Length: 562
Image (tube, rainbow, N blue to C red; front, top):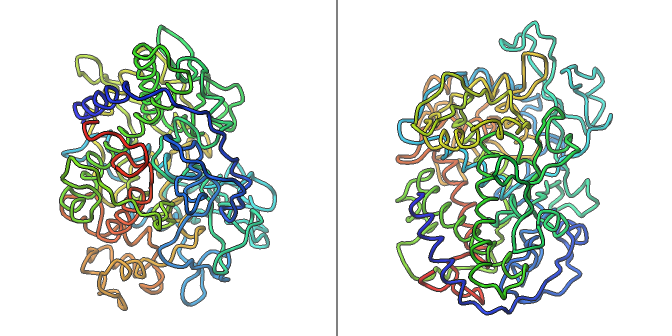
């Protein structure tokens, strides 16, 4: 992958040197003017470069893929009241508690993958952050009924905006801890909350970053954020020099970006750069690579303006990013033959001119709230630092102890050691088991206990109105299910028995739960249902992006040699 990366990069840099200095600075609209994508009070202008906020990527539908626009759905939302109340069982009873499902169906165990390293998992998070970020509200007495100490508001059932993630009284992990709920689960802001019209009578969640693969996690998703990140000289991004190395700029107010105790808290195009050390490392790699290419282009083209260098560098970076994801990463997740079969990639050195202006590249709720989250099973709880001689030290980093605290990255040689670790340490296996570091110790609720990411994923699916697992099975062309035994074609007898003990009927099983128990498709890391949903999303993401690097009809495409 590294060899391919640099070969792609070199050809793009060489090709861009010959481009004319014809850049005109463009001002793109701010996202709050578009009312969740319903209006666009501006005129699109043809440009060689994609806008920061993805406006006018589609000239027929200029708000498609912009921040603060709606997620899409493959199937209509399923809310108990038809508008926003979380789904109930078919009988009208509450569904099983997510934490109970997590402990029963996704037990804590460590099975390492025999082929893939942690880089496979971590690249997945980079992609997720590039494509999606839900619009989370600030906690208020109306929507928050779980304290930072995990105490449940006894009147929570009287607050319609409140949806606490409750801990069972007999929970094996939190028993005798006093924790009654997991903080901080808040319902996602929807078009209904934002004063926009609601489609088909049901609320729809908004994504606050661009919906396309444009490295928004590096460059931002609006003009104001992007300007804060730019140095204004030589096309480079702002940086600080410490210990003779370039680091992203830091912020003093940490509570929005870090956990409040960090000595180092970075600013980037995405607010989650500090979420975990390995993510921080990869974001710094991207940040430094931009500045390296910009410096190279500035030296070769001394007559170019700061804006020209920045935009050409960004264009190269996005093209390399897209190429690696589709030609290197996706074949690992979905299988190479499946990628060719489903037209995610082609065996050609020519342009791939299947851009379709009628395809909305927007993020599917089923993708962001279920299918892509299934890769959390790959997360390792203990991170190994690897020295130059490829020796592992005796000490390790516990993921849960460095959540939203990137201070550890700059200590000693940790940055280099963690980067080597990403490409050396095996990923955890793609199975039903989760590392307890992310199901019991992630962040901190008490002195010794954290939260459960798996339970969060299940709760988020219900919050977003996802329909039941068996409905998505049918949508994906799999056999219909009416009895528990009908699930045995894809799920083990042991897990089907557990499902029948936890849920009243097969029609009640959550998409996030059922699909994660399926046997993996050969040569892939997911089962048939999630394979189908991931394919749907990544096909949309490519053919719905007018500026896709392989599109020869984009107006100013890369050359074939590039």
